[in-house]
Image (tube, rainbow, N blue to C red; front, side, top):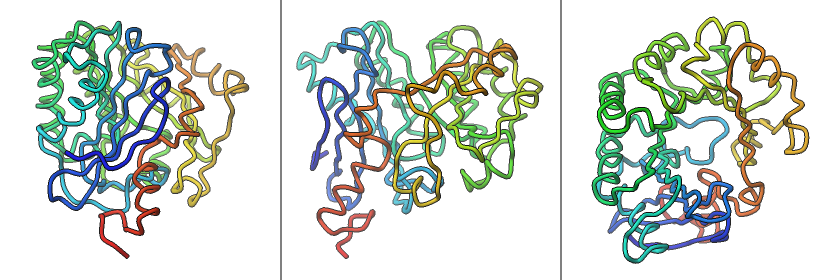
Length: 307
């Protein structure tokens, strides 16, 4: 793995762009404090699972092309680089160590993600290791999700962050935002009931936008607050979001006053506002932004070929 570009601030988040061997495609990964003041308190590593992404969500700069899946070794190279950079001894000491499979690529489309989740535990044996998978739950990956459930039950006892990108309770709107076949809300709810064994509740993520309808009554009928929590996030300022006129609807200052927050709480859901460190927008460390900036600079398309 060769690092060909990096940007950011070690005290907030640093995003890396890497190329593997003679492959003419790139991945991003991020070393972040997750809003904490030190890695001893919280350490988050966010890795890519694919060269590009076949989903092409309307708000994500990581789409536009797809050139294959990363191997387990290629997934681990990203994690190893960040660990060794901050801890040459290879020791991971943090009150909360998260590895998020949530960068470029839909993780459930890559079997190697399951292997890498366990490899991190075996290689580093972190005391407070919490894997994190963020997924749209594409159809046809039932075996992958079955194995993920087994991994949670057998190795993490609920200390696992599983997040489903929902964004709207309206299925037509979901299809617009995430234009691939995917599980229905009911299917996600059924799976969540099987996956959850206590510990961290399963997260339903909604990026707020006026057209991203959240029917709280439907949500409550479909999902149990005993198993699921709701996360509200802003729409990050990506090129794709702007192109599709998906503009953020609240700021850090007024997010807590957004009406849907109180409705969700009254329905029994734990609600988390995930604004994040706004300096990360300045760093442009959101999915696909580092890659786009670099390729624009060198005059290449997203699959690495010169224009």
